Image 1 (cartoon, one colour):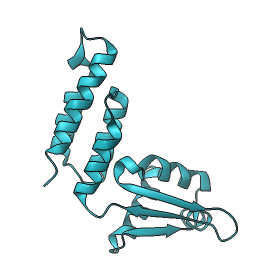
Image 2: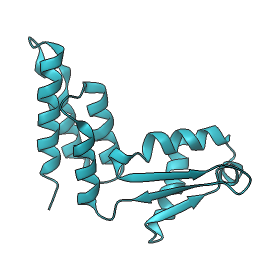
Image 3: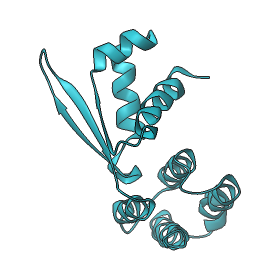
Length: 149
């Protein structure tokens, strides 16, 4: 297992204790996991994003911390993601959103694979890049909307 996966799992376990927000002392967590503090930053900025349903606050200095708050519900997370997509999205970013949704268990693995197939560049051959990205964004939003109760 990669260090970034371990860090993300430890942070997710903190949420599993029933909390809607987690306060992290970056250096303490890095020491506990045997990694450098920049790895903690990387995981937080790449996996605990607003698009994934998280809000990040940080305070620097000696008593500094990072506060991660997650959306109250799965629907809130998906709505935040849909809003963040905008009118256009390239394949790489669409895939990243789908992987994040799968990692957070917002979508199951089978549907994640289907969504990845739908946003693949091969489906847009013959279209200019801008048109393909507009259509891809519309498709991804529609697929995500099916997960809102």
